Image 1 (tube, rainbow, N blue to C red):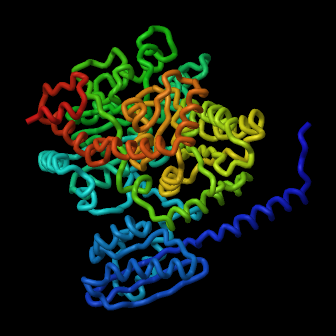
Image 2 (tube, one colour; image 1 turned 90 degrees about the vertical axis):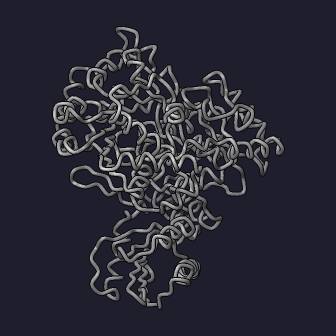
Image 3 (cartoon, rainbow, N blue to C red; image 1 turned 90 degrees about the horizontal axis):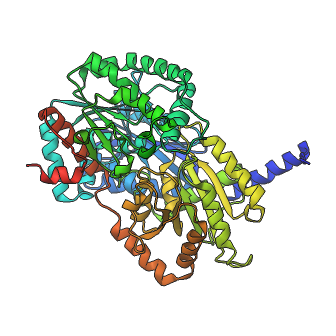
Length: 614
């Protein structure tokens, strides 16, 4: 029998939650503007409880350090968290802006608004900073009418150079020079929420710092079309869909109509692009339109998912039917890029047209940049606020926790994660101060209709099957605040990635970079990232949660083993899986398809192709 709460009980519960949130003493969001003119600069600060405006003498030697110390003192004195600061361009100093992001965790915004009077305009700049964020603290994505996405400026080219091996940077500069005067356009499904969008934000940001004519466009939002592309394309190709689900004629009609509308929007893009990259199946239907509008454009198809090629190769399967529909659109592409796992490549794709290339992550974005203990403390408070708002108990920061950070998706093995944790907890008493917790988090994406249902199923699974663990397991769909995800991984003890099907989860790379051992199944591209018994553990049999629990217990109970593996994780994290290498890879491919009519990939790894080129 379902017990319903009375209005009084609900009100009492809400009051209690509000009191607990107040006790977190979460800093108040604040925004700033800085305007430079010759010998002075003006600073304006805005928050819900405080506004101030100041002018200072400008000194090239001292202004940088003064600004940063000013923000730190003011944040501490008034319990503020500055989210963004807008600057007038072109007078703003890139070094000041970059340091705000990397050291002070403040998003720098280079405003193109024309300034006439710094003393009055600085207040407008503070409002520009505030208007660049949503009320929940998530930065707004800048999408133009033609669906062009403009990533935020965060760092300088010098910052990237410091993070890049000199040989890689030299090769990148060479490809940039060769590509000069040409345009490369990337087209994908969504502006945020998945691995593709994370990579594209970073890639376009770096290209613009280097003067490369690179643009990124996203498809129009259509829940009806996304239902098709997620459940009938993505899930079927990964073989995680219900066996009764098939791509129907109606699905094809919905998809074709949506693609036709997008092709009309992107027609000018097709005409002016020399190279066009199609990211994944969602925009695959655009290829015939591109060929018709600009036959000279080179088209590269990039597959980011695990494709069960043994099923696409078998006539009559749901995978074969879906793949045949996609292949009919993309068969005339000039190159096909796959993760470096040959089992992901359907037989129809010509060997000579195929290149193997891993995805990357960015060393300087919010997901990976270094954070101070004070900054991480803010994000942990924010996480506990999210838990309280979803009627969950806060994370106990005195106890260790294990984390799985992945989308709420049927392929991510979330039930396995919970089951492995339940096995592990049998080794601990209820009063053990080292009794671990489990954190399951992931971002949402507008093209993913599975997200909310899987999230709700996860909560129901815990409450129905593991009622004694409800206070030990935290489940949150995170807002798009990258530093929050960064913090949760950095403060965790161990990272799980129990995906049943996985293209190449770069969140594994991100965890290893932070010195966190990763336990995962030998699935998809993950074994290419983890060195078994060194940087983590690979479980041979998908679904063997007992073995996962054993590895968890070993790392939690053996301090020497944990310390050694943590050090190895940081040391062995692959340095070629970062944005500068990705930028080199794409320009290398673009230059070759434009210059060499007979360029052949022959299913070779991109690193091999680059190293063997003259």
